Length: 152
Image 1 (cartoon, rainbow, N blue to C red):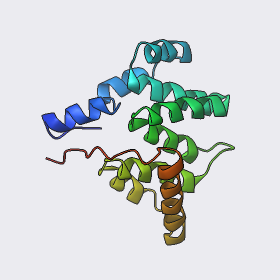
Image 2: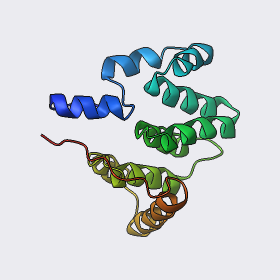
Image 3: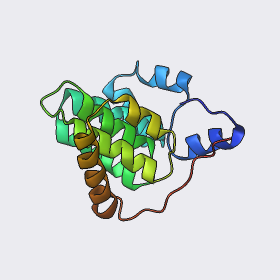
Image 4: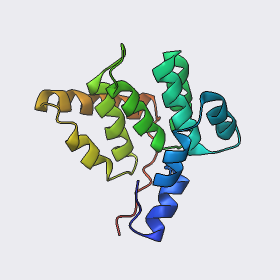
């Protein structure tokens, strides 16, 4: 998540995205350390904590952590949800994975479109993911207003 301007860096920080260095640091922490950082208010740590919890179990506890973060305005949490559903686990669901990225896009992260394109899903899968994202936008994010990412 590299910023191209000060405005974009501020937007990323406000919406829970870590810097490359912060992400590398967080990924070395264990669950207890991540939980402590999350409880101290580190939004990126909350996402990594939720993601690691979902992937190592219990799955739905991790999903709940990520969903709560997303509802609280942490757009990076949608990337965490996407990563969990894209992983090679019993809960793999590429359509849901793409839908969460699309929701990040709808809520203002225009650069999520590049990640969406890189997933290589079929046209039918993309349509289903778009429909799922629209449903999530209504029920999950309760029509949260977009906060556009600066593209300077």
